[in-house]
Length: 329
Image: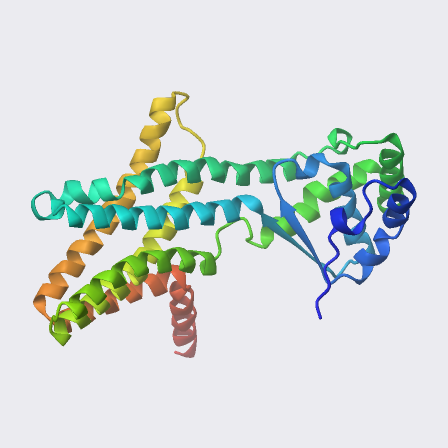
């Protein structure tokens, strides 16, 4: 049975004697823990007790795993899921009003408006990632805050005892610890979270499949919608372009210009990249479905290949296979 020691709950916060007993016994818990999970938010490294736990865990448990779980990743995933549902609702409205028949390009732009605001929020959210990197790079122990002088003296003396001096501990945080935390790749949205976002888009497409089925459409028509629309477009195609859009939000998170209006235009450029890719995929899906089931399957295979290459490390496997093939020759 897995046991979790959650410091703010497991250490008494009001009784002074119990608090001190919990503090002095903290090293024992850290020593036997297989993993230290850091729920990182902006003020984390400004809290001396949080810094102390990092120092104590690495000293008491050299082989233990320190894993950073940034809260901005979870917030970003929530925004992506909500944005997917809002975009799905937008498409329902557009199709219900038959706007797509006469103004297809404009109708898709209107339906995807929620994605634009989502991307702007994602860019702001991604700035927290750079904040974490900068805080580790420029860590200063003297700026970490603590409520009482007793706690501060206790923590500083422990750090000096473990690392030799405060300066050596600061160098440890800026160097080896920083490399260890950032090497985990936990600052990016993991694939399982992206799959959750993609499933939200797939659910909207499944409504069309069910509508065709209930409406008495032929089996080929239903299969074409399922394979070409739900699987190919809303899963295999939507997944890599979502990942690419997140990369753009990360890469261009900081405003290029100081003007607020220009900042929104910067988001607009990222949105246009997403819109162009999604619209191109939808056009290919529509053309394939109108050409028959065989063409739809070919489109699905193409979309799967793109998804496998960029989301499931297909290019890594191809590179490894190519290297082995040439080395065998």
